Amino acid sequence: MSEEILIEDDGHVRWLRLNRPEAMNSITGTMLAQLNDALKAADDDPEVRVLVMTGEGRAFCAGLDLKQAARGEGIGGAGLASAGARHYSTREICTVTLQRMDTPVIAAINGAAAGYGLDLALGCDMRLMSDKAVLMPGFAKMGVVPESGGTWYLPRLLGWAKACEVAMLGDTLNAQQSLDYGLINHVSAATELNDDVSVWANKIADNAPLAITEIKRLFRHGLTQDFESHSHHVLMSVLNLFRSNDFREGVQSFAEKRPPKFSGD
Image (cartoon, rainbow, N blue to C red):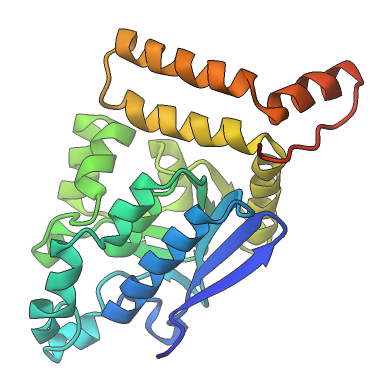
């Protein structure tokens, strides 16, 4: 089986690279299966404190492979009844796995992110984007909807009216527009994107892993809780963290005026 997802560890940061550069990293059943497995493996590995997702070559992910679909192949063609349907009708959905993850995920948007690729980027916790990259929310122009998370993320990230503007007009957004809309966190020069992402990822990885995990969990739970219920949930998390070695290390390192060395326990 071809390696359509490349995995590389850099300290406590793991990089996942979508690896179909000849097809702008457009999705296949194999890619989705490998990506889902890679996401789960990263979330289960205590040595991985931050995950970075990017694409090989000149694109992040062009979404559906339109050439395959035009031939009646792949997820958008005859294969919809097999690989595509299995993917979208089971719990083995990459974007669902991504949303459930406790490990922070950064999207390094190195090139075009369209269709599924855009939804995949929206599912990451933070997005850094090359000044040469574009977001392509052209779902309505293809006769479909943002099927893999976009209909959930866009109203939450942008508000109702702006989400409708992005999804219903379907206009391509450059990096500055994406930043102005609030869809991404930062724009980097194309040659500096990976370096900037590494800086962000390593800053996160250097912080207390238990606290980072709890922050992400609490953000996720807060989306469906009222304030009072959420406050009780937060209190229980804080009490647990007070008993951790990481909390003791944080307090001691602050008192000793030195950088902390967190162990994740």
